[in-house]
Figure 1 (cartoon, rainbow, N blue to C red):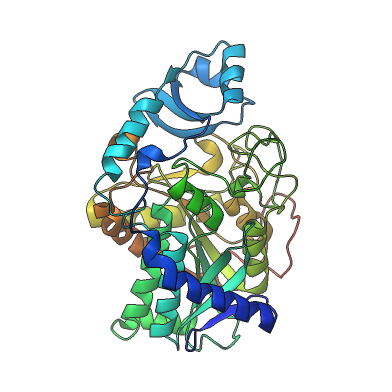
Figure 2: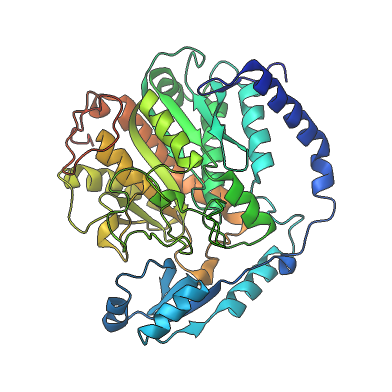
Length: 451
């Protein structure tokens, strides 16, 4: 693979690297065989999960307290949930009535994927993401470098693309991190991250503002945090959320966005200690290699902002998520989020809500953005991509909408990147109002945003 700007972070042994390169070459040669006869979505194993809906009244919602459930959405006064058999028993024990919705959801999924040439259509699989990153680095060798952050549970590489002038030098410039696909079923999050990489690289020589951003800072993009889960979602169970950890209890998976170290396991509302739960937090903070890869990368660079892409709800969320109370930086975090939403609206006319994460429908603990803000004091955002509800596609965004969803997110990403490399994001002292647990480098200081 001569010419590919790829390295492991930290570096692997030469023998292991050569083995991986051989495996990659074999994969490339075999890829055409993988898509000759795509499997019908109807043949997927949807396991023992059901999609249910229940009334969104205050009385019913109060009965859900303490149940760590996998919430899909709120729509027309009802709450939709992906429920395990254990969840259904618990709902029955609390006399909470529900309606089975699985048939309607899965039927819609089958109809929407019938015209695709493969199970994932225009959305990237793990192998396709790998090829895309390698190609971008090969086409732009002076400003793009693929970095292998480590292996997933099943041995897949977790890749980051670093974009910066003098990309092979360790200049420790101010950096922004963008992640996608913490949750396997959220395919659109991969596409937005990849398209941002392509936009920066292809416009470096054409746009003076983008050139200045690449000159002044670093952009690190991890489009697929959960490669094992993504592949399982494509080939086995479209609604799969977690990674593929064998929990040893006839259940699989840890919710990677409940596995980060800040306020991990704070309570049983924002995450669960039950391995069967869709929001199972794991046996300990950073128990999973996928979250460890993000932790280790973050500790080695001067990151000053983070966006974690998810779907769906069409909203920008900021800390805190583990509690209802605002942080001491509420004004800054909300202000930056509102500016991003204002920049997104004119592109396609879509309104992105702006909410403190813990002030919405449910709490989360051990998630990425609470960790990045709580441990490093940097602005961190979860952006839930469109659509607003299942009527417009849910997790199953139309292939035709990929470009438009990216286009409306682009000005927000460029805005936050500009804030990152400007004086606004420099020299940040930690100001978070909850105790740190795993900070490894001196954090930066948050200042008020410039308009």
